Amino acid sequence: YGKVEREAQWATAQRTLHGLNQGSSNSDMYTDNNGYRELSEIAEQAAKRAEVARLRELHTLKGHVESVVKLKGLDIETINQSYTV
Image (cartoon, rainbow, N blue to C red):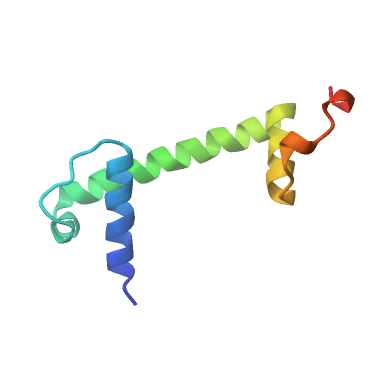
């Protein structure tokens, strides 16, 4: 229910976030072939950012620590820094 509307709102938010034109309306975005291309480009950029974040987490100590802190819901400011490397 309302999947198309949610996708249109997400696409509009992403376009605003990335500084792209808003276009005439959200419904035109789904009927225009160019709209799909732009959505595909935004999705591709998001996938690249996710891959970079994954590699950073995998290959750096800082990335691993941040990931564990995020997963466990810890506050990194309260961790005793004198025992860390």
